[in-house]
Image (cartoon, rainbow, N blue to C red; front, side):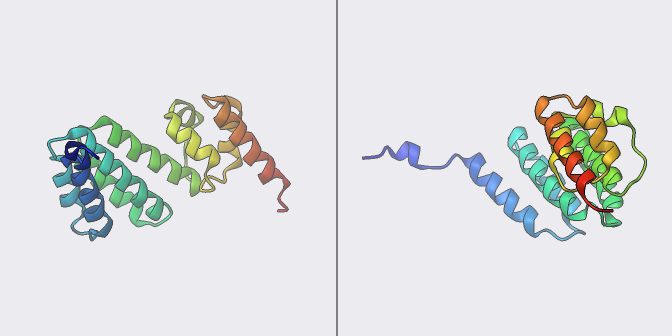
Length: 160
């Protein structure tokens, strides 16, 4: 027999799922207001997790789209004083710069978060051999250095 106290899902879990569902279907015009609403949820950690998941989905969708720049600026304004979300948006912008062969610096790559370095070294979004070289040589973890080295070898073996 199960204890009914443990059969019920905590309310913040239900709200998290509802937030994700709402964010999945939100229009571009309504997105900033909905993100702001979610961020006002009383459970700050849960709200931030829901918004981070949304930002990652949207950033990946828009990465090479010209609308990305305006979207990222808007979302940066909406997330405001939440350093984790602001940093993640900045790192998506850096991924975009690398993917589109726009200016970036080696220091930006080497000082970026572990998440960024793992994503940049493993994702097929980053095809810059220069960026992969920086991560292969100076990535923070062995995992990043190995993944970047492997991708670099693959890139060098492909016919041009």
